[in-house]
Amino acid sequence: MRIRTIITGLTVATSLALSGCSKSSPAGSAAIVTPAGQPKSGAAAASTPLSSAMLAGRLLTAADLGPDYTLKPETTSRHDDVTVIGCPAMEQLGGDAVAGGTLDFPNKAKATFAYSGGKGSEVSEELYSDTAPKLSAGTARIFDAMTSCPVYQMVIGSRPVKITTQKLAAPALGEQAWSQMLTFTAGGQDTIIKQTAVRIGSVLLIVSGSPALVDSHAEKALSKASPAR
Image (cartoon, rainbow, N blue to C red; front, side, top):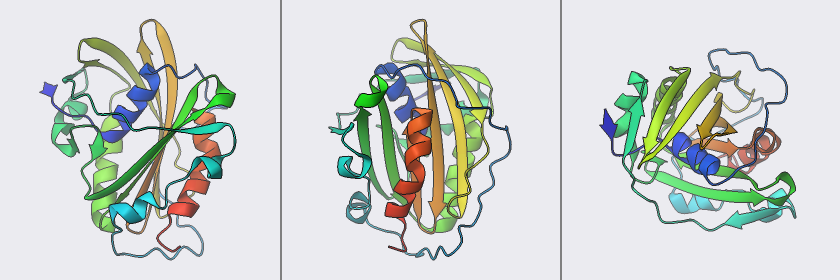
């Protein structure tokens, strides 16, 4: 089945992989379990969705991350055709995203940073806002689909990419959380990308990139993005 669009996490992760992220290995072995969000003590998230402008003000900055990080300018999306081979659940997600790779929630903001201390590694942060039930249902469906097939292939334009997925234990952050590891094989090289999503109230945070960078900055990003601020 040929789909016109692709869900945000896979678009961001594929972009990071194909743009030359360094090879990396997961630190330790994570149990493969069904993600289950854990309430964060004292969290009092607002239920009213935030505007895109408000979300943009809650993104991490290079100053928040440190001197080794540089904000990358946003590039114009290339609306390449995407073909999914070998994963029916992923094939059916064509309507869950808009062209350019952002989730179909009304309010959103995004930033991507290059990390000079990790041989060209990158980390991307995305924020979305909607009602809590919509964020919860939409994110769960997408993450379940992305990890439903251990191995499948995507053809982006004319470039084939093999994708291997692993569902990880969710971090004890926010009200709900999801985590996965994606291995991209293209041009004879493997790139490992970790992705963690956390919902707190009406805000969804997604951090993607080098596993070590995601682990280092997910909690900091959530603290800044929290509607309780």
